[in-house]
Every structure is written in structure tokens, then in C-alpha cells.
Length: 391
Image (cartoon, rainbow, N blue to C red; front, top):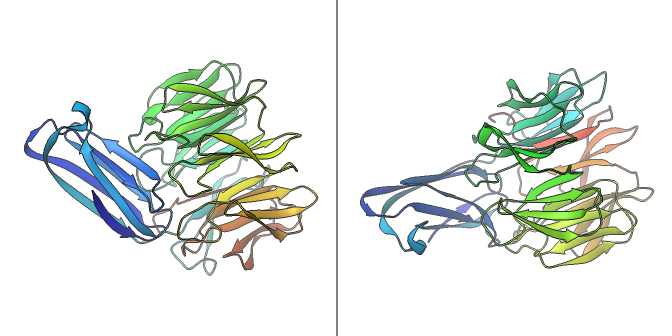
């Protein structure tokens, strides 16, 4: 077991390699965050690597190095290297809709919001857009659907690649096979759910179409799981890339996965039409958070607490935007409705800021729970944070 200290936003890279002679080591590394949650893991025949993981909170991180074979009893000498770079300011990709298109607000390493720069990405407004590390490096890539033109990726803030000729109705990026590269999970209407593993070939995951797909670690396993809402069949979990489990009989029209109680297992938040907002803590049972339905949800460590506990930001139609802090306290943020919202630590100080679109008033950021910052006068269709540049 090894420990090191990192600040929120640091990019962490870990590599371990056998030193000859060894006896069936097959190294396995697991990275544990300050809260005790497993963040990621990697294994290999003679070496393993975790590439450019962004530290979610400041604190002490733990590395476990062991053998992946022989009931974890393999032994041998190894070299362990841990490197990190200072916090990188996140960028924002915003879809301004038909007639304007897709833009990114690039922070260029400057102290936000003093010198951001707008970058035009595409004149066509996508029907869907999300982000992920599709090629395994430290830059986030975009995963998009352009109406009538299929499913696309924008790699490293520069290169457009068509992934499939069909338009997907859901798009998600997640590392299902636990090798450091996000896989592409989509729903093709009429064809079910498909996965493109490691930028390779397409594999069908399920024959039914999904309405929502969200990724997270919702059990005690080391692999990323999926939470999926199937129309008419309710909410299901796809655990460890192999096991289907029914989680709720009702359909959810919004799903979020985040560590709400700062323990090693992520929690699920669903918006159930007509039944309000519910949470499934620690993969065990459902608890109602609010009887009123949401129209827009986001999660992030808004108060910047050292435990890294995620807070829940919700838009209640007719009531405005509220935050559920530390799973216990409701705080009103604004009386206006903002169905498009997201969180990102725009100033890299360890606290997630809230980015919102107030219809008719443009895009704003609520910084550090105190200050409103105007970003743009146009309304948007979506807000997708990510680290798209190299600053």
C-alpha cells in the first residue's frame, strides 16, 4: 500500500511494471480516493497504467499494488511511478441551437472568468452531446449526434470522426472494460443498445432501446456500471459489464450517479414522473428526496467539502433552482427556472461551480456559492463541461 497527496484537479498518472525475475506477479493497481471510494484500477501481464485521472478532491490518495492471478498470491518485484500535473481549468461546450451551432468556452489556463475564449466547433446543432476520454489521453473528447448525419466524435479538440452512420437516441461514454479508455455506449432506435469498445468494433449490449443511460460505480466492484431506464420496463443496472439487475419498476426521465454520502459506492438519483425525486444509496434501497418532480438535475461538490461528497442541484419548474447539500439541507439558489444546468470547478479551487441557462437571460455561472457571473446572452440547448484543451 502506498499513499500520496493530491489537490483537486490534479491529473494523476500511475504506472507499475514487473522487475525481472518475478513469479507470476501480473500487476494490479487500484487507486482509492480520500473518501475511501475506488476511483479506478488497471491490470496487465507485466505492467499496468492509470492515465491522467483527474483528482476529484484534495486529500490523501491510496494506491494498492497486488497480483491479479493465483488468488492474488502472485509475488515479485516491481517499479512504481506516480506523476501529477497542476489543476487544469475545465472548459464548457455549449449548443446554442439551430442557426448558431456548437461552441466551446475555452479557459486557456487563465483565472476564470478573466480571459476565456469562445471557439466555434460546428455550425450544425447536435441533437445530443456528451464528453469522455475516448482515446485514453488527458484531453476530453466530445461524443455527438448530428441530425441525419450519424454519431460522431471530436478528438483532442481538433479531429472529427464519424463513429456510425445511424443517429443514436442516447450517447454515453464510460470505461466498461476497465482499461483506461472510455467506451461509447449508444442506443440506436430499432436496434437496441450498442457498445464501441476502445474505439474498435460495435457490440450489441441489449436488444431493447433505452431512454436514459448513465455510468458510475454503483456496487462494490472495480468496474464501471450502467444505470439504464427502459421504456415500460423501469430502471435497470448493468453491473461489471456482465450482469443485469432490476432496480426500480418505474421509468425515470432523468438519472444521475454521484457519491452523495462520501462512502466507496456511488448513489443513484432518479426523477420518476408523478412520483418525485428518489435516491438509491449504496445500492440497497430507495429514499424519496422530494415529492416535486425536477426538470433538470446536476451533481457536484458545490460546497467544496474535504470529504468530496456530491451535492445535488435541481431545477423545480415554477419554483426555481435549489441545491440539496450533503443529502440533508435544501438551499434556494435562484427563483428563476433553469432546465439546462451543469457543474464544473471553473476556477479550480476545489468547489464545483454551477452553470445555468435562464431562459431569455442567457448563460450564467454561480461561483463558489456566492457570486453570479454572466457568460453569454444566448440561450442554449445543452451545457457539457470537460477539459478539451491542454491548459
